Length: 181
Length: 219
Image 1 (cartoon, each protein chain N blue to C red):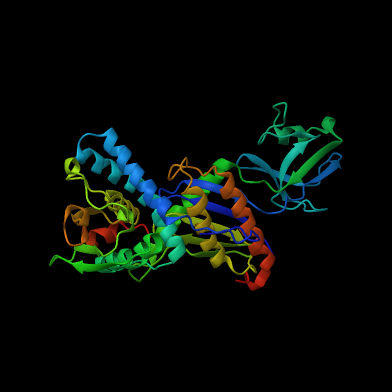
Image 2 (cartoon, each protein chain N blue to C red):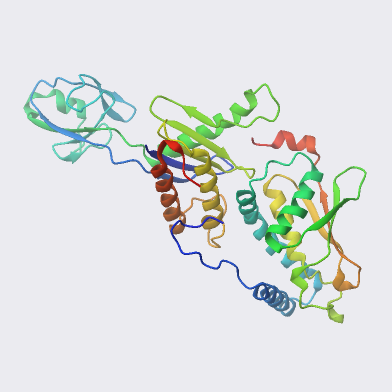
């Protein structure tokens, strides 16, 4: 993050707990506002999308990474660099399709669910961290990579790990024509 | 050592931010008697000096004001054509102010879009696949540096040819953009940037880069 020169070294870190609590409050409010889980999920995804389209430039400016030449490079970049930069955790990547355009990010630790053990019974199909899916989708779209991002497994729902699935939609050859470089 | 201007162009080629940083140009105002020894001619929407350079009035300078009243393109403030006015001996002695015409915001918009197209042409002309667009344009009086982000935004800096460290300045401007424009919740993407903090921080960054001079900024 750019800082004006000459300013005192302020403590830029905000409390992680505050962030996690804020996210929890957001989800709780959405649950009060919407009856159906699907609506909450869609709302979180949309919010994440608005964050993602802006966050991508911050990520590119701070990390100065070069253009990724393949989908697997992109997935690695998200899992190792982006997650580390913003959430402080890294995810492991696995490619789950022969076509090479479906990837899974497996998160061991998810800081957003620090204080949540499991979802309440009436909210069984809620994707608590759907914001993250929206963020990834929005960020990828701004670098001209259309993708579908969903939760494949969720610890809160009883699965063993938290798994985010990224499916890249357009083929790389089509992408080249649309590149505006 | 100077950085003359900064332009930010969005994905569609529209200019979303522009800053002129150079020192105000010196206008020259002189009183003339008939006949005028400068040769004036119309050019675009202005009257410019074509010949007869003297005393700080250079070829290419435009007529900015006559007798203190600013001219409106090719017409004086009262609506008379400037060249006719100056051809009439009864209007003399007359005081005319000459100076370098500064680009209007419309002209800047047009030039930014043109540059956007040229940038794309630059990458297509390349014999290699996947080449970048125009990164630098050099003339004898300035160098234009362009940095395109992976998201399609272009940052263009016009600077003195001897000024170094423009690459890191462009990266810094990208950081400032991502901080003070993008993180501003009331700023819509691709729209003109009207954020005070962005202005302030950009000017600070330009000053830091200028102070570093021809050796580039130190860390």
